[in-house]
Length: 148
Image 1 (cartoon, helix red, strand yellow):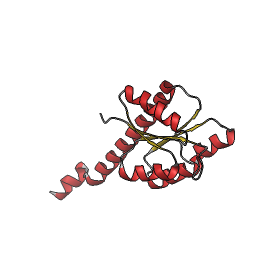
Image 2 (cartoon, rainbow, N blue to C red):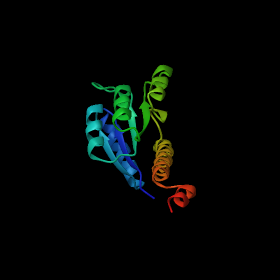
Image 3 (cartoon, rainbow, N blue to C red):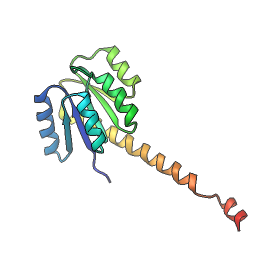
Image 4 (cartoon, one colour):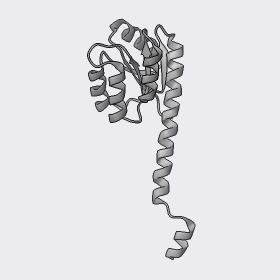
């Protein structure tokens, strides 16, 4: 099975470095970005499965970044993360395509569990796409018999 590749996007350097180290100790490949524009650049270069995205960031905020990720990379699963959660920002994020929502501070194990659930969701979606593509090119037994 393919190994999950994760990206943390947050303007708090300490959160990024600490969380990255803790996830790396558990054997996960983690990239980090300090803002939305940097995250989008990394996504263009690397195959990332799950993004943990802070809502409140200077410049391009989390909701704007989420919308752009979903526009450019629709299969990337995004989990919103904030220390300033409001019902409105949670609803905005979920409406815009976020898989889930976490409050800061969050335990690394909780973050990892949400990321693994999002990764499994992505794998199921990729499998559905593969099956649909296969069906498109396969002939039914009736078509095969008619052709002979």
